Image (cartoon, rainbow, N blue to C red; front, side):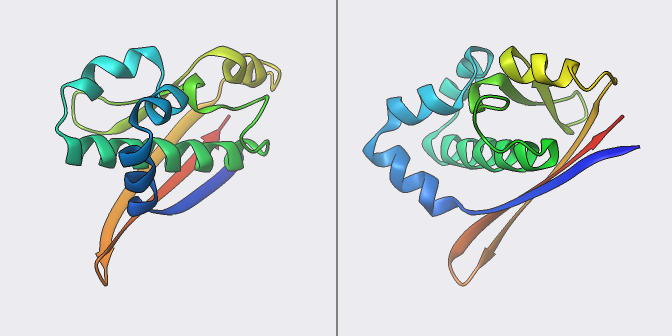
Length: 132
């Protein structure tokens, strides 16, 4: 059974501009502690790509959950990584995990990304499907 579907479209340059001005603040706001090591090992271009995907997938997840970003879903509660085959996966922690428990269902999370360049703009599209 589908619990919710969410999508988000983001101009990567938006994240890049914030990262240039406030790198430590943005990283602190968006990343879970478990994401810091791999993030620090990336070059600047890949750091911006990762932050854009993290922002976008969190927005899409919050829409699928039906809560928006806030008390029941926040950036630092989601851990974005790839499995051994490169498939993106989300691990859920904190208050977001607690909220998912109130749904009384084992929730499976499906995510996908697409990033395309259109007229010199890099766009990141994230889609999240929550399944019980």
